[in-house]
Image (tube, rainbow, N blue to C red; front, side, top):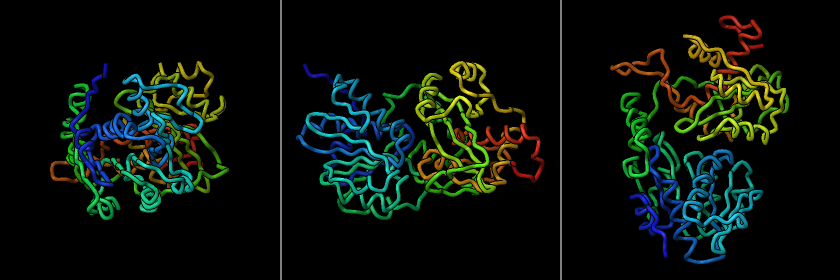
Length: 390
């Protein structure tokens, strides 16, 4: 007996799209990635064999926490998962004689691999035009892109959407309402009160323009330096609605270098410990964490050198002030942290004037950096107004 699968409006729109390229622009939790994966797994993979399906994102940690997680959830929910078909080392899965491969673009040669039948680019606005060219040239059947809009100048709008062989699909959380818990719907709709522009982008899935950015003193770099004057790790806890974020922070040549190591929802404290062990974080490495005693206690019980950050009435503004004294070098694989830096902004009054209060969104990785720098300031007693960390 066939099992009935529940699908959303977004699935139906992608299913009907027959063009070479299908662009999905949508707000937060519109179900665009999940729907495309359902289509690839339940439909496209059973239209033939010996095909390659590439699922791509800019960095592997971000891919594992998003599309890869959804992929295996769909398989298991539909009783299709077989451990024997899962190559965890190569990040591949065999389904009906077809190869599903999960690739990040951390390595340039990944873009120039063998040809594929189908391609899904998750969070496509993280990629540059060269990434797109290399991937699209090697895709024979269909290409699916999904992303949340954040700015009006991007190669997707200039190069891809105007093509005659492109279908554009716009979606919001309302298209996925039957699958969303009420608490999450309230959080999304609360953006109307938080910030008009955030609501436009992440609620309505429309193009927006971020004003009043807090940080402009940063740039993207290829690699983390081999040596730093000091290195610590900043950990911000999350779970269902907010991600847990672990950021490597180091000082080199008077500049802060930061590298996103963990950025994922649904992680328990044992999950975080397991991930840190896999990352090679030792028991002597210093971890400065959000001041949550239970979480810190459980991680410390696993032998990690973790302690809480300082929290006071002005700690957020003080931390922001410290970070503004540096040029921050952000590794190119830190895609979620880069997204935060592009969106973290000051609140505005009714007239649109910035207030000296940050909007409490897009700050999980940034908070991890702030925890480390606040701790350095207090521990060394060497930072006064206008002086940098030593």
